[in-house]
Length: 134
Image (tube, rainbow, N blue to C red; front, side, top):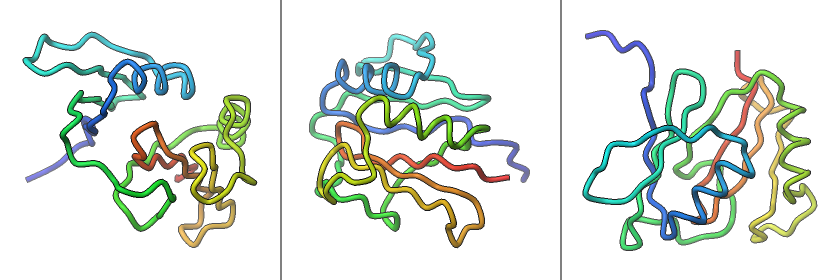
């Protein structure tokens, strides 16, 4: 069997309007049409892949507001890492924010992965990684 790419990542959200605004306004993702499923949601495209938000207040959520890079997360590779860091800073994310502050931006410019990585939380404490992997 051959896999050619990751098509999408789906994450649950407790407030669809808030999460849709977060990914559209804070990250500048492009919202795309979504079929009329029985449960509400929003879809975004990034490159050839997609992010699917599913409105499910009773879904499985992380219970911590602390960024744990060893916990479940999804990663977005970007072409200009520093430009995205500047964008996140302009949207209120800060490296000097307290560990449990929802605006915390954890940056690893010299990561063991051999490429820069940054981590932050969405409104439901989903961990998002931005990186400059090859």
